[in-house]
Image (cartoon, rainbow, N blue to C red; front, side):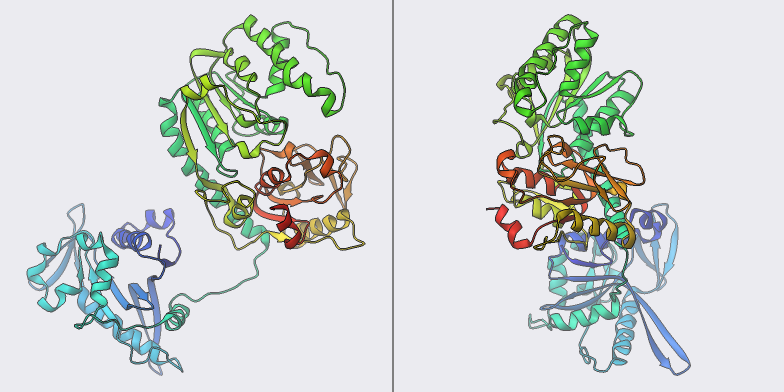
Length: 573
């Protein structure tokens, strides 16, 4: 992809400037077809001094440059092109006729004026450089206007057909009669860039940069959903796998919402993580009309046991080990009993975090699904943090239509790239599209310092200097904050004026704090990863790589890691 200046043209610009549709068509073709050695400057304006009392100004549709091939000025004329009595005309789709200037004269004058402008620079690295010129008719074939074009100009003309192979066309135009190129070199082009597209640096607060990133995340997630939802209604069984950040949770939630609103279906959204279900029930995705049920799996077991009039067995203890059998078998068996008593309930069941469901649990879910109902399962086996490997029953897999989400639309590129270092693929086959100038930040804890003191300083900087809302910050740890192994104690730990809490509906003076596992499926604009080297990790954590893969990818826009880069690198080994 060519290096474009500006980098993109917004939908709003396109909608409000229909007269420039031909230029936008050429812009898109240049952007996608040229290699990244090419520089493309769109709608460039330059000013020079004609005499001491007057400035001259000139705009050219495109200035296209390649360090080893040359520099070309391109004038674009859209519509059906014609010449009547020596006057150039363009006819738009509504058959309106517009008088236009001779484009060959226009681009020639632009080349001369650009040379004037460059001559004002001392030194002028492009002094005496020969700029090529060409004209593009993106809506016309050359054969229809050839009789009106000077024979010497025809090889400098790009019509609709030539536009399809624009790189070869530009290369041919930039060759001289001996097949040679006038090479400007990289430094000259960078100098030209500063003239046509100067770079200005302002110290923008991080909150503004993050807001821009969040807007990009929203647009890309919506685009990803449109593709999936066009496919989903015709597929009763879908198995959607994707990397962290591919938007699985957003897609499940939006799919459930649309099934309820547009298709009038009764839908169950079920996940593993309790906090994820709580967040979804409080979000705009939840439709409280009796047709949508949202629950984590074990709450689903308890709710249906209550509806069926069954006595719910009590948990045997408070530790993870004591309750393992209770959550793995006792509650699921109760759901099977309740479902058999109540019968099928749902037109569709959408499962998020499918990798965390034991094979035996799927029986209880299928008992709740009507015979012709839809089953959509979202899955990422690399986010499985607990217990032995878990698998879908073979009979479910055979009936599913697989979809792979290979594009990360929820994290910036730099966060995605870091997370994928903990992924078995090392990122091969996956990509991220959200750009940002903010890289993950490593903050080592020095000898004699406490992590609490370091995090307190970070929170103060983020909220006071960077203008970030406390509700946009999450403090995560690999350790359990419920069983007391973490230094963070919800409702007790204070970081300056902020209290750490373990609920998502935070007050203005509160910041969310959680284990990485309890935050799975959730995401936050800013994440601070802590306690990565605690002695308790060896006892509590089965796979630190999986924890880091999930933890890093919880940050959408900015990630802060309490570690040196070198020590963090060791966790990848």
